[in-house]
Image (cartoon, rainbow, N blue to C red; front, side, top):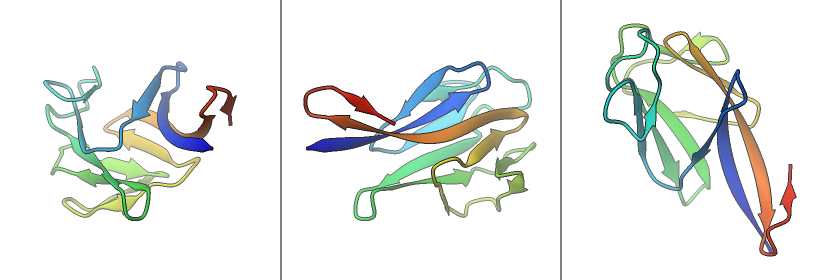
Length: 109
């Protein structure tokens, strides 16, 4: 049996595991904190949909926008994320990838 885990990866290689719940992305008091001044205090939200096993991103009306594959997404509208998508919050770029973990702990990418 295997479990699917989704990650955001920064340009420097830092991994951020996406939990199976809603998280806030921003500069201050968020589950995923980015230190760029181009990121609002509460910039976006990433939500997990258990029925479809998908993660979705929504911009919260940020000044510098949230982008999926270099396309700015509309405020307050969820966009479904896919493997190899490039997410940008302001000027901070993160890549999405999926990792399959077996019950024994062996990792497959």
